[in-house]
Structures are given as structure tokens and as C-alpha cells.
Length: 323
Figure 1 (cartoon, one colour):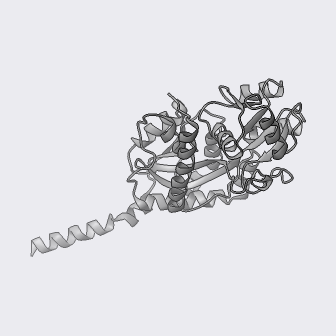
Figure 2 (tube, rainbow, N blue to C red; figure 1 turned 120 degrees about the vertical axis):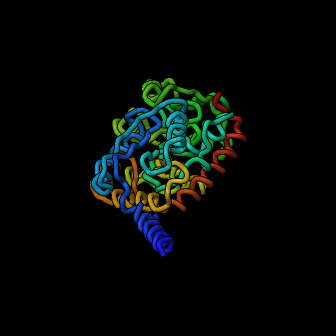
Figure 3 (spheres, rainbow, N blue to C red; figure 1 turned 180 degrees about the vertical axis):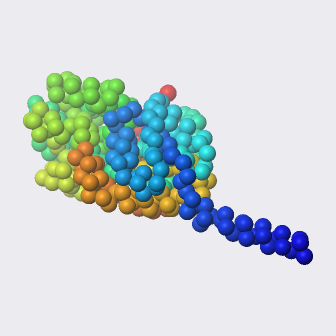
């Protein structure tokens, strides 16, 4: 009789500590959000804006931990090895899928070691040129590049960066040959482009739009398939003769693999609520970032697979490597 009562008691205890109850108790301590890049970049901006409202929904503080280095790999490795209990989150960008092809070896696997939570935000790229370049649209830019192969200078904020790869995809799709010049960041790039030392770059609106507005640079096109609300008169590459060209920076939330599904669902739901808040939308929009890219963990997983396939093919085709 006592054995039966013990078994029943244990079954009751197990039921009371099942996943739904566990999810209701989560989180019971502050959450660390690893940002794998320095303060001021896109990942950091999205993390800090989301952090304005997310703690109030979770009932715990969100502590932002910038772990920059190795093109985002340092922070990614740290997040991959963190406990899978929801106490550590990770905000990644395009490098999570591109680094797998760019580097000969990574200390983590982007598909095996992370559980997708939600797409946080996206940002288009702009093709901008120095005003001295006589090109006012994509067609004219391509014609100039083809007229003098290997002479037009294309600047990037660094090898393997999302905007560098966007430019490489443009080259591959348009059949143009340009001289690539790598910089250590978008800041030095802008200084040289404004000075006329390089002619063309693919940049985030937060970087180049102020210079376009002042007339120091000229915007040629937006790289997303549809026009960007921040500059509605600027045509897209897709509508300029290259349908299907749809390239953008993305910022998404992840947890270590094997984090309980109930925690993932809770986080995805709360992040989606924050994304829809007008204050959050406005703050990010002022930085050229769109919060409209909400979705389920499954949708993010499918997106990652598609994104990896696109860039893996391009990186191999163009022979791009980072040692």
C-alpha cells in the first residue's frame, strides 16, 4: 500500500514539474544576451532597443554582453556552449550562416548548436556612389563598370561582411568586374568614399543615408526586393532589371541547442509583442531598421537554411575565404 502511495505521489510531482509548469516559472533570474559585435553596430542597436520593453514582459532584467571578435565567432562560440536553460540568449546576424563557408573551421555549428527563436529585425543595403561617378541608376552603373573592367573601385567594410557579400552577389548577377577595396569598418570606408578615393559601396542606411541627404554621396538603388519606406523614391535592384535580387542585413535571436521548447515559445511570443510596439518600431526605423520580419522559430530555421544555401554557393563560386 505504501509503495502504491509513493508511486502515485511521485507521478503527481512529475506532473507538477512538467514542461508547462517549468515554462510558467521561467525566467527566475536575469538573462544574458550575448551580442557578438562591439557596441554601436546593428546587432547591438537591435538588442538595446528590444531591451527597452522585453524585461517588463519577462519579469527579469536582460543583461547585454558584448563579446566581439573573429567576425562574430567569439560570441557565437560562447553562446553555443552556454547552459540550455534560457539563461543565455544570442543575437546573430548574417555572419551566422556565411561564416560556415568563409572559415575553414569554426568552433561551433550554426545549425546544430543553436535553437532559433525569432527574427528580430532586418535592414536593407543601399548602393551608393561618389557624385563624380556619372551613374544615376543601376543600368548606368553596370555600363560604366563593363566599359572599364577591373577599374571601378568597390569598397567594403571588411572581407566577408554582409555588405561585401551583397556587392559580390551583385557582381555575379550583373557580370561586372570591379576592383575590391577592403576597409576596417564602415567609418573609414565612408571617409574615403566621400573624399572620392573609392567610387561604389554597399552600405546600411544608418551609415550612408546622412551623407546621401547632404549630397556628399548619391544613392543608386536599394538591395531589398521591394522599395524601402525610408527612401520610397529609390528603386530596388530587382525592379532595375534583376528580379529576385533581395539582399538585406538580418538580426535574429537564438538560444543554445536543446533549450526547452516551452522557453523558446515564450521568448518568441514576448519578442513578437515588443516588435509590434509603436515606440520600438519608431526607434529602430530611425536607424534604418525594420521590425516587420516577425515569425515562428520554425520560419527562422527555414530562413537560415535558405540563407546559407545562397551565400555558400556564392562564396564558393567567387573563391572568398577568411583565414
